[in-house]
Image (cartoon, rainbow, N blue to C red):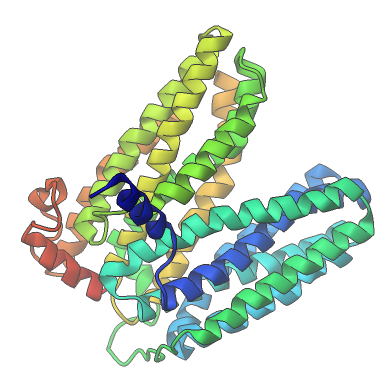
Length: 441
């Protein structure tokens, strides 16, 4: 194959395939652009233009996050019962409406109420969308589909941040309100796009088993616990690292935007490629194990940057950024695989709800933990986080073996499967694929 042909193939791989995956990707582009707008302007609008203290803004968003976590499983269960496509359209449209409420906030209590509605809508949307993907995308293609969604999401957040920069430039209440209303409109557009996706039949619980079966699935609970630990890598990059660079290293703070650019470019260009091999539960377990080891390595690099001269600190931070994004992509691939592969058919909504809760818990707890451990203790704090993520990754194969053993599915959790280097030629892959069909996002 010529170099030009390889380049064309690489470029083609970045474009979502025509059909359902492309429709869902474009919907996700609108959704994440709205996120980017809200992320870039909301806090400054609330604290600067409206005069609500940063502490109160943080409290309102924390209360909203708690409400969102409580809504996740019931909303996912409702998507199973009434059909995930209709549930997703309704949840996304409602999210768009309540998001516009941010533009009319005038007090702490009004902000708290809107935040609760918005973050509840987020949870409901994520759970129902996860179930919808399970219904319209074949099991062996789900991880690849989510890789496209995540690549597009990085572009969307970037676009939203650029649009939000307009509001920051004008720095007026009217500009902020217009942008927040635009974000709400984009959520609605994202929801309407799902009408182009085939309807998925509703699932009725006709078997003699608990309605919320996910609450009794201990192996799945163990998996989402590990996911909550591994998801901490995100806030470590966005919250802990900039403070670490500014307070504990001799590197210029200007290096941090470069780190974010590296992260975004790598995810956009490489997420689909890195996800190869994680299409079944055995591959997902391997991906999570490798993610834990790689993320531990990035924590070591960030830790040593604190005691180095400027040039060496910059080198260590950039190297850590590259290692981090590799671990981040491996974690995403493995998490998507197991979130579907360890869930039974007909209950994907409630399972996606619990999976979404684990992401929210990890993202909510990490900023406080990072401030205490990393900023408070210095480099040993990075090593603590590294050890935690390493342990979480190493435990993933055992959780897969536990889950498949309880369901009486031989082979998918065996050591031989998890250590196999070529899933496509491994006979156990056939079994693992079957596991997915009895099955995040």
